[in-house]
Length: 430
Image (cartoon, rainbow, N blue to C red; front, side, top):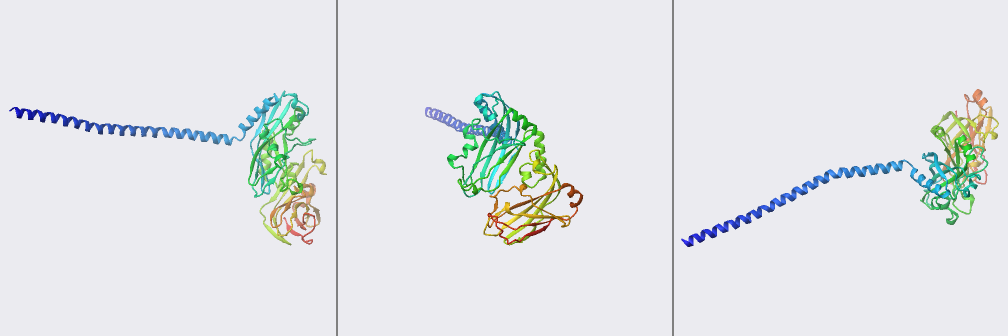
């Protein structure tokens, strides 16, 4: 009996121990489930938080895009603050414009990225000389980008002079108004032979000092012009320039900005009248994409189009013209030079026959945008413009409804020698 009772006690204790062990084993899955639930909950929280983070990142990207799209406001603000501190003057922005303008020169592109006209008052007398010896006036700060897309190193002295109608002198960069490292004439300078390496892009600034009397003049005119110089292949040879000089017109208020936009939308050919902003053009008649081609010796000539425009010269240019209002005919060609010599654009002449061939006139060299160094290289192609100055009264009364024919040539090299043996190409315009 005692043995049986002892056996029952042992079995009872064993059952309790097993049950206890079983409870512990069952507790582990409960902990595992809790961990899984916690991980799932954490994952759900992350899923909720991720869109918020993505939204924040998206907002940051939008802000960055808006800052980029706004142009150079931040850069100009920093430069203006620097200028105030440096001159001890008080600055206020009169007008800003971030509409880019570009000029292409055979693989070198110059862009005017934006500019700010800043009134500068009561500055230190040490800065007065460039402001016409006045200590009130304004500064025009302009940002330029220069890109060399050719495969050779070039040398570029940037003489980006500012002028305006009837100005008696050119304005250039004031070296003490902006940080030296930002100034374009310091980036491309004699110390590095004005080196613009193949594939290089450079961003820099000019600051033009304007005295208060001069400021009143240019605000009355509403715009100024910036002349764009040409790069060179050899820094010591001024005859090694490439491309043609350019000009940017900078309106100084919203009204004149709208006028310039209207001019640009009309797409006038870049003759000297347009390039140098010599006055106002109005389109009378044009024909584009003509595409008629002829061979002249080893040169292929394609007539691209023509424009008849009414032209009123501005006050500065008016003395060069006999009449206050004239008609210009600008004709555009594409030239393929198959000769082993370069063609000089400035030396190629042309004749226009009007009134059904009863009258004729020569092209006007003074209205061409070319210098003696502008060429169409051997084996290459390029644009050629020809400009004719027409009497407005005769054009309106007689010529405009009759035929216009022109002769182009002969072709000449850089020494002005006829290399097409006197041959000329003939085109009927209308």
